[in-house]
Image (cartoon, rainbow over all chains, first blue to last red; front, side):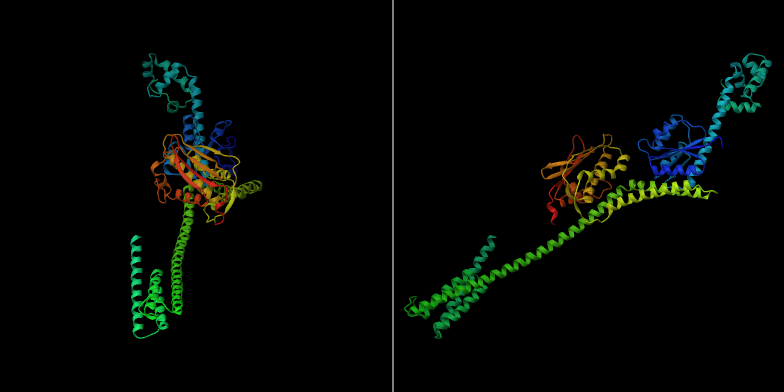
Length: 207
Length: 380
């Protein structure tokens, strides 16, 4: 927890609300960074560690909901907690469907805000872990030769060495050696482990 | 008119005839009973008084002349002739004529006076009734103006609720922050101080919003002061900012610089401007895809008049019904009461100005009102 100090981003055009959210966030030992507009947020310097975004629905120009849509399209994944002066049901549904963590109506209880932030950061942490794991697997996968890739693709479908050899037009012993290489390079402990990795890497059977 | 004159003539003739008949018969009776000139004169004068009281000036004049004739015929020598031998008789008859003329004139003057008095009494009653009606109407107007203000505020409630909710959100959250800092084993008082400062700031901000609203809604008595027209317009535009942000329009203001200050009630005047702007915005919401342009102009139209103009690019007005717009309870809006424009016009007219509407080119409507620079209505 010490090395991954979380940052909470706040976008609200109103200074009262901005200062207040910043205070709540800092009082529980998290970092807060506030922005007056979405443009200002987009031009921030990148930061490490888990983070989340507290977004006002009613912003000048692009609304908070539209900005959420835009972030998704730009492939920027960040958990969002919405705050709004008046929340109607369609608005809440739309935001939640697009992956919002929580929809808070002003004036909100600070504990509700902290709970939502906690959940948002947890979501981001999990997502980050998954992302780093996948990139690690991808790096390992890249060290495989073309033939090893083919063997791996067939192994994860549950085929025996003999069947794989027949399919690739080679002998069983060669497949056995190549399979050993795959297991070592991918750091897989078992075939089941390898199958899980293949799933994460989205290796299709047809390959 | 002609009929009443005819009946009048007939009445005078009848009165004259009756009077003459009475005079002739009385003279004959006196003569037969052997009375002298003095008795006959007195009795005849009585008849003349009665005729003048009930009848009119011409009938009593005729009766007087007939009475002189009768006295001459029966009571002065030679009897049974209109000749007079005794000069004293001539004087007596002349005096009789003068006396009856004086009586007739006095009585008829008395009757005229009475008639006039009665007439002015009815007029006075009418005036009092009228005055009371005006008073009642004024009271109603003032009440309506207040209702309208409240209604306008209702239309802006969403924006205002937002304005108050923002600082409240800050206060609630900052209070929580302070409590959390204070709950620590060694409370960070510096942080507590900072967030208490924010609470004070936000509280003040909420109070300012509320006092701005109160100034608009309150039953403020009319107060004329010399005010800067453009400044008042800018204040109204500032009030509509949230509305403008929610439904963006291209707002253009051409406010003439160096306008003379005008005598007016600030709140009432701003109510008119607000009314016209809100109407324009609503009209443009119905206009669909067309560009939404709101133009607010001010300037001098003549040497002693300033004007304010609100132009929109909405669907415009039905040229045939321009005047109906200003009638009470006439509305083209689904949720309107049709009071806004009629009250606006009342306010402008109470300031000695005029408010009217025309079409805008190529689309939309223009509402324009003028106000006199000189204070004509200051005395009332």
